[in-house]
Image 1 (cartoon, helix red, strand yellow):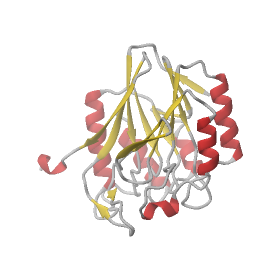
Image 2 (cartoon, helix red, strand yellow):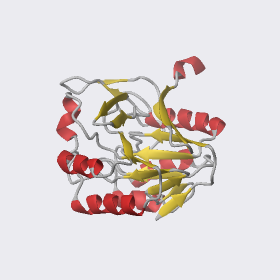
Image 3 (spheres, one colour):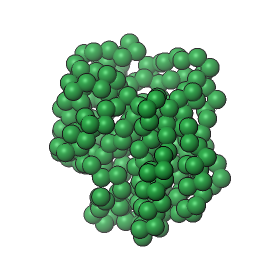
Length: 257
């Protein structure tokens, strides 16, 4: 299935990742209330009216039915479509049910003028990421069918080592993933979540962008350390001329108290 956006000169896509919601709004994850963080981002997005929201995994922490219901409640005020990818904490069946109700959508191929965004499912049986043959074939088929000038990939797991503790839960099939990317010269970049860490770098003419978490950030250290940097996400701007830019965003909740 493919989702087609109405033609326009530029598109604003908000990428949210690693929300780690629990069953109740006031429940805590790593000393913060992830639902309050997400609600603050949603308030901002309601005012800014992006063309779509991408959730790139770990939308809940305990993968409970109540946590997905809370996610649906928090994002219900959005007037734009919401597309979801599973993270290692997510329940596939729960996500599939969620994506059948507005504003959520089930498509993983998004057509924006000359751009096509492809949403890769990297969830595996462990916290680490996978890129199995079925996903390789899906990506190759999407690229073959695409008439877009440029393509961009989104997934949950980081595709290259970050030289910190999260690498033990990184992408296991890096060789296959990068061979698939190299075979498609129109792929311009890949963005991900999972690392709770905002960064950007370029390898072999491919941009790699890590989206910060809406919940807490991880420090790029050998051991697991978290910091409350406030609600964070990444804004994307895809131009009909084939240009792309991104911006890391952060809210200061203390300024509202």
